[in-house]
View 1 (cartoon, rainbow, N blue to C red):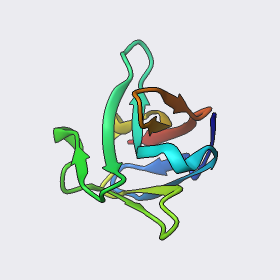
View 2: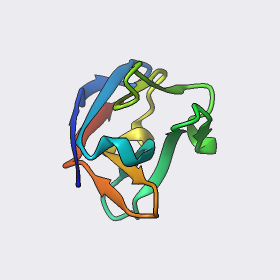
View 3: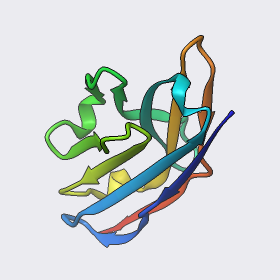
Length: 116
């Protein structure tokens, strides 16, 4: 089991920035990667960014150049620096932990609201 705790969401004006944080605890030795997903009202959950245990990153096309995923030296905390936020970025952002063997765990989500 992996427990994820997110923080850093909030309300920001368009063009502003937020930094999300997620810390994993529990069976972190089996982590294969950490990532961020988001879900807007009435829409499916979608990938935002991933960072694998190797350090390789992957971004959704709609955030390239605006968002940056990073992690700390322990590889159990992941961050999402979000710049140039747009109204369309409004969503609940979820941290996800991928585990060797294929299972994954989700955080409780943190609300990001971007006002015009």
